[in-house]
Length: 542
Image 1 (tube, rainbow, N blue to C red):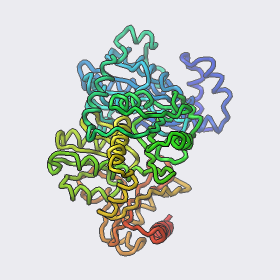
Image 2: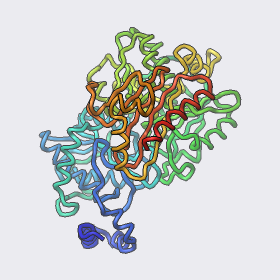
Image 3: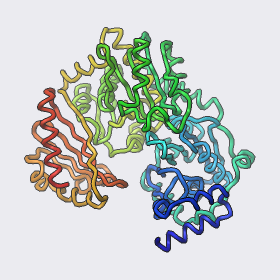
Image 4: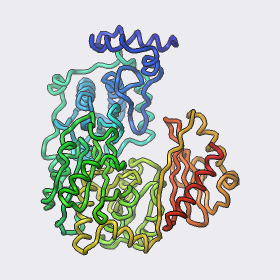
């Protein structure tokens, strides 16, 4: 075993702040487990920290949380005279414990801290950071990852996730700190006596009121709804906002209602995946429901299943974005004065839709923080933003995607169309008839080594090189080299005359490359043929 790793392990074993239970856990770990847990530091980036929970420098635990929070505290005191921080957390195992650990470090550093007494979603934390005039926010969550994971996301005073420059500066402060010797903290009980307090209930009520006002587009409410929070933090706010808006036919999947970080009914609590809906579909058939709505554990994403005959069909993130775009644009005064924002990898179909309404369109890099940044620039000119990964936001009350309002708006939209005798599937088909049948699919290609992604991207780095792989190309953008108006990033976009668009983007942390493919094609057989052709071409360089 490497000497540096051995030194770290011994340091942890001999630390006076480690509990006996934790020391026994370390003693019981195999050499392989120890190397995995101590071979690196868990990386802090613009998404904060995220990793498997456990002991070690490369794992999510209270010691890694405290060190990161101390680095954040130093950063805040360098920039603000009397910094303030808001903290929230979701239903994952250890989320409350990690939130309390962060509050203890901030209080010890003399920073005014507001923490929720109960779990609250990402959009509520975003709103709270703004409402309480905080200089930063912390959200303990690993979004829709499997149960072994947890994470630590940092928000700016705007309510949006921190951008690259702030993340780099915070990381620099973190790296100066010894995990144990340089990190002082209060217990949570001491923190409550020294500058930490629970967020007042008025903030949550204000969030509901402002979110409700921003998403009121139609008044129909006659609809039968099945909702599942997937054992996460959406349970209270989604039910509250539906009740406030007159939706009185809501059935909740009881097995997925209470907070449970083990997510016993769905190993990966991701509303993009059809397998998480099994219990909801059974309940929907029993209740003869019109729509099924699901939110992930931190309730920043929403998924929808719509009725088609006697069955329920999962609507993709892009399809829900298409439906929302048309629904909101058609009910917005002077849409030509508004702009919608979406990520580069989201469906190209909304460009045609925005053009038909006279709406401006801005594309951002992947990550809702960039959409949040555009809201600050557009202000009242902002209409709606979404990402293909089931994240949506209408209004300016928050700066991150909001599953609470998206859930309400999906029900509102479905009720509006039901009153016309149409389902969401009917409306989607009508939009395809108007704008072209656009099919979007993301494929993740696993590699045997993360370093291979560099060679793959180099093999299509120019238009000429891309044409050798994919044939004739009508449009080409290398986001790491070409001037696009966006920050440079390792991503390549290829377009073909038949409307095919392929975006290739390597993972920064895993040995895989993602292909975001879009085709205008209604014939199922031809669609499969075109997808296969792209993947076969790509496999030649993998």
